[in-house]
Every structure is written in C-alpha cells, then in structure tokens.
Length: 162
Image (tube, rainbow, N blue to C red; front, side):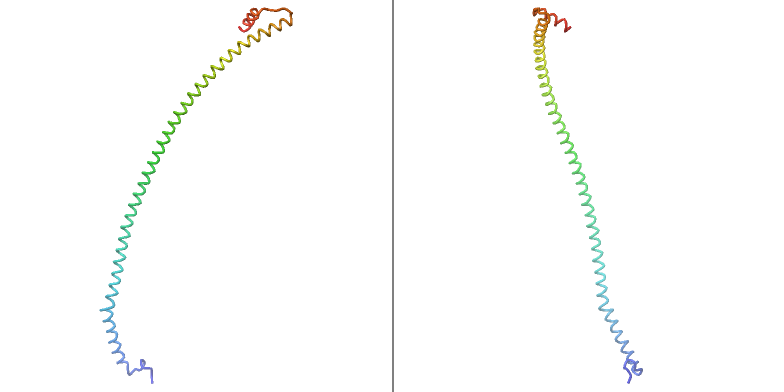
C-alpha cells in the first residue's frame, strides 16, 4: 500500500478537500484576521505619526526655550558686565579720591618737614658761623699768638662767604 497522500486514486478527493480548506482559510483570513492586522498596522502608523508630531512640537518648544535661555543668559552677561564696569569705575573714583587725600596729607607733611629742615639748617648754619669763628680765633692764636676780636672774625667770614 502506498502512502495515502501519494495514492493517485485519492487525488480528486484530496484536491476537493484542499480547495475547500484553502477557501475556508482564505475566507477566515480575509474576513477576520486580515482586517484586524490592518487595524493594528493603521493604529501603529497613526501612533507613530502622532508621536512624530508631538516630537516636532516639543522640539519647537525646546528650541524656543533654548532661544529664550540664551537671550536671558546674554542679557544677564551684559547686565553683569555693566555692573562690574560701574563697580570698577566707582572703586577707581573712590581710590583716586583717597589717593588724592593721601597725596595732600603727604604734601602737607613734606612741607612741614621741609620747614623744620630749613629751620634746623638755619640754626645749624648759625652755629657753624659761631664754631667757625671760634676755630678761626683758635687757629690764628695758635699760629700767630695774637688774639683777634670776635667782630673782626665775623667780618672776615662774611667776606669769604660772598
């Protein structure tokens, strides 16, 4: 006995059953399964399309937020730069004012010191004349044995200074 699917006497019955089963499967696929698959595919496409539109909308919002952030950052930088410049200018003016005050104080102290130095110098020069007069009197006395009067020595020193 031959294998039943290969038995030629049963081919006609097998072909009829093949056609019936194929027709039934086609009917079931066409009426029930394929529409459901089509629905799922359309639903997927709609979901993908919605997601892409949402992504595009969010990208637009993100770009707008980024532009707003960059503008705010730029404004903040320029404001900070302005504040820093104003602070630097204010500090420079204050420093200049203090420096001028210190310069004035130093100039006053220098003038006072110069007056004291001038007074000390005059006093020292006056005592130099006295010391020089005494030294000249002592030298002349030692060398010549004569005593010269104080007035004569002062006149001689005054003549030398001129």
